[in-house]
Length: 111
Image (cartoon, rainbow, N blue to C red):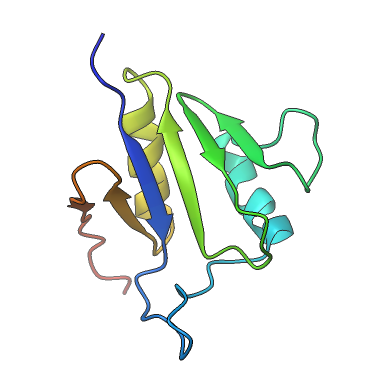
């Protein structure tokens, strides 16, 4: 089995005046945003620390609003497709935790 990648998802916007990563969304908004991708808490609780989806587990920080998410791939046959769908839909930056490489996705013109 191939080594599964860990990703840090965060906003591409610059850090705030205190050096913290830019806000992505509130926890509740994030849960609602990810629901169409079949990603959510196992118990349905918006306070859950881990969201589960096809091939991925998303670890949310305790802070609200959320500034970054740690994603663990747990099935390398489906996780890349889920991550690409998220990258196409949201203006988020995906950084490989181990190599520090960033996934860039050309989104095209929105016109």
